[in-house]
Amino acid sequence: MGNIEKTEEMHRLFDRTAKVYDQSGVEFFGPIGRRLVELAGLPSGASVLDVGCGRGAALLPAAEAVGADGEAVGIDISEEMVKHATETVQDRGLDHVTVSVMNGQRPDFPAARFDAVIGSCSLFIWTKGPDDVRPYRELLRPGGRFATAAPSFFSTLQGRWALFPEILNELLMPYMLRSLKQNGAYDSQFADAGTNWLATPELIEKTLTEAGFADVAVQEEDLPVVVTSGRQWVEFTYTTGMRGMWERIEEQERARLVAEVTRRLDRLKDGNGFITTPVPIVYIRANTPES
Image: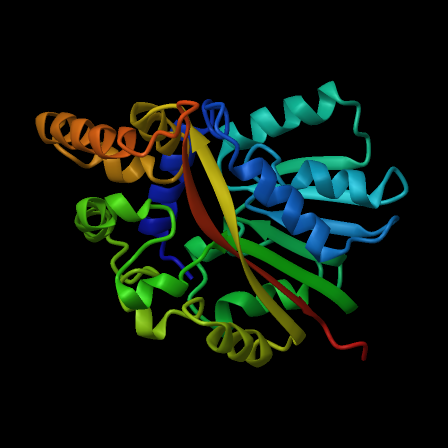
């Protein structure tokens, strides 16, 4: 799991991003959260924990799935994320949903507290192997469900990152790696793709099995990300964790880079003026043994 310095960096980044997180008009976190909940198969009346819930992209669909007789608990390290998620929960009158500030790497709940633990575009940030995943198994009751989603790392073995359109990968990947090195996170999922537990379905299954899970299922699906301009794509990335990469680039260099990104993407506009880039998302499900 991440050390104190890296955790604090993540905390500050998502506090800065919370106001605009998933608010760019580009459909991204919402569809992933809904699909994750669908694949998780949460039953009515279940108790579910959403780790790194952000503004509720998966928490709200999970609350709908379990219904008023169930319970949906969201936790996030960012006070600002929790504030916005709480406002949405209160506005919708969801009495069976609670949101609180908590470090998702070390959830402070009793063992066997939940029927399901989910994490949409969150757990991949800090989990590196079985020891990091095992705490989520311990929170689950026998027969409980674990489900998570992340931008797919399958292409990292070929030096590509799922969140970058193919036309931008060679341009942006050096900046992403430099940013990770600067913030002390160079042992992240990018640093050594060959040992990244998310790099192949086989490694995912091995990791979760070693963490005590069974019935592991992995599937990769393309999510079409649709923007009206290269500039809108850049603005969208500022509402995600990629904001950290942009902020670490010197202002003049960043302006040149944004101009080149915009130029390349604008060449992809279709006849209706839209740019559609597929982003592969990996969805992972597993169960705890019945006994």
